[in-house]
Image (tube, rainbow, N blue to C red; front, side, top):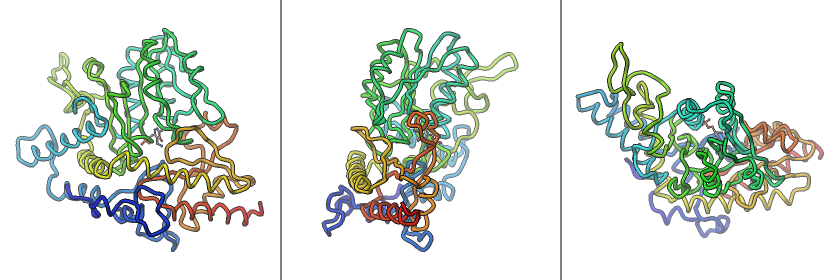
Length: 428
Ligand code: PMP
């Protein structure tokens, strides 16, 4: 694996030349690792603030993909030849990188999937085979659709009930309501580690403990968490942890699901085909042990290798360092937006990751997004696949700026200037 382009950590720390003094990392130096960020958009410098949707890719990840296809491509597991063994080694080494990222006890606790959505569907369809009429699944009111709809499908199939715990006006989970909804029928609790629409960081370890006390399992949706702070599935004590590679600077189409070993060993398969079997005969088949049982067919081998490179990249910088950097950006952006009359922040939890959702009086979020785009500022506008959460706030959607390690105060300034410009244009 190549070293990052600017591998000196000191070079990456915020420079003392004035503007970035309050930041932990120098986003401008790190941005040099990401070729797409050097590209002008609408003839302007790109301020990419749509990281909640997907992150850009550093050169090391692009190189890992290209080197895989140039030097290492072969199908895995089944081959006796050198290239096949080499590609299998790379695929399995990347699994170990995921294990390190999550501090999972063993690489065999990690199942490759297409992303968070597929991970949750996998749990709903495999573990979900034990669900019966009368059972309950509990989620929070701030979940992404991918942590709601698979459970609705499961409930429709089985006669189980999906419940949700309410959230407060600041966008925090109402823990009392969460506790009140847990009961002896609750079989699983689904919790976003970080809300994609609000940025709220949920007290996951505490919620997992409450779930376990009620006899339920706990699944954590880590899509918005893994790239923005360190995650330790053993400390969280969760049973399932899902994330997407593309939100942690890796390729699209690859992600991972951690499953507690004692649960994984008894999980039935969900997709049948090559690689997930031990033996096949017309009388019946037997299943592979470990994560292979859930990886039928040729997987996204190059994607896994790219994900491994992305994980190495963030771990080299340090996830706590990244968290501190993004937290400083969030604080500056929050302060600046609060100074603008007519701006309403949606989601003001005490513990937040680098996501700022807001509304501007008299301007539809889509119009705001379009105006910002003309100045090269990329944000997201809409319901953020969290329609029940938007209904809770009585709004159709929000404008959302979400930060990553390569952002800096210039990006925050561009966002704030864009909002003021939109207000002028709309005369509000
Ligand atoms: N959960 C959360 C909290 C998310 O933010 C997202 C992506 N926006 C998902 C799940 C789904 O991720 P993917 O589309 O990569 O499967």
